[in-house]
Image (cartoon, rainbow, N blue to C red; front, side, top):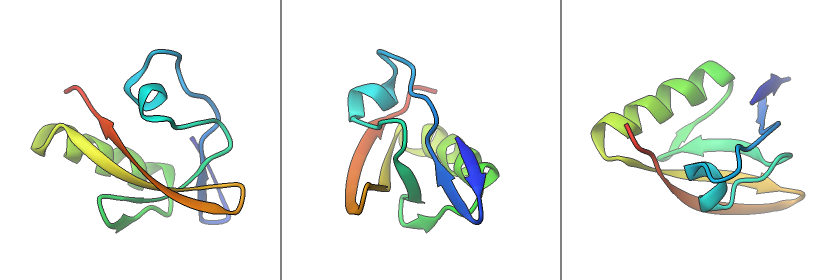
Amino acid sequence: LISLFGAVRVTTVDPGSPFDRAGLRPGDRLTRVDDTPVRSVRDAHRLLCRAAVTSGDASLAIVRGTSPRTIVVAIQS
């Protein structure tokens, strides 16, 4: 993930990872994790860690190109 001008963009996705299986792709822009806005890599990390501990999965709002999407990732803690 990189943060540039308040946008968090995915740079790489490890093959076979939960994020890969959920459909996250390099270039996707992460905008929300479980209905909480993401404005920095620190936000994303904190929210994903919280989701791993509390529920084991997270709903990610992303923008791919110009299309908004929602994907659910099963996070293993």
